[in-house]
Length: 338
Image (cartoon, rainbow, N blue to C red; front, top):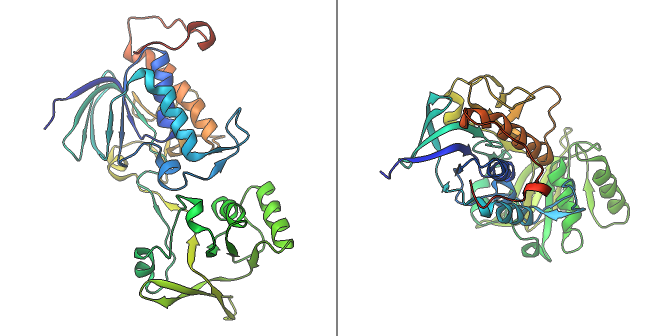
């Protein structure tokens, strides 16, 4: 077992919001450590869709998810926050000013406060109930995220789902692959603007819309996909030629051991005070997708705001004998380190 690590704030989750929390804490000269079950920083942005464009980051009309993580990483580099990656937090004991956390790798972290930026928790895709699915997954014929758009050039792609991921990837792939979109109804849950773009692309013949159908079966041999069988509720079926199936049915959320910490929750989300992002446990804060409160929007930019609010709420816990003289970054610059 390694020596205990002592810090001001333990941040559980190294996605974009967890990374920005390092920056906000660092600007207040508070130290932090990042802990994440994944082996790389970035959360879903890195693990699921590094090439997916994000359109609602201020000053960036469009930025790839992977590039966003790279820029956040550069932004927090002055603060040299230790990273405990490939580790799952197991236990939390103590209270404000004196928390102890342990991981499944035997790490022990002592912190004055805790920020949960766990996103969707230990996330995984919702898999369609299709016979032989695991064989096609193992061969790469069924994929739940696109790491490199170029890998799909010239392929016959069937996309299933009606949310943002399905629509965004249909639009992103239509110029390099043959794309068919399967959905059970004409109305999509995606952002209205991109849903309109999908309709326009379909009208131009750039994307085939397969509606109202649902996935029914996969056909092929040895994990090699030949066609995707779809069916209506009336039992009418079609066979769509396919090399790759991309089912986008969302992620299943699992908070893991965090669920046993006694925090007040609303389903898989942790309830927080809107003004401070503090949970029902004093000294423990939650930000980003894992947090919920009246008026919450699941946007990365709102998670960034929550990181700033949590950092300022934590300061008196971490520095009870110091007054916080808040200054804008334009006047104070970036500290060399906490």
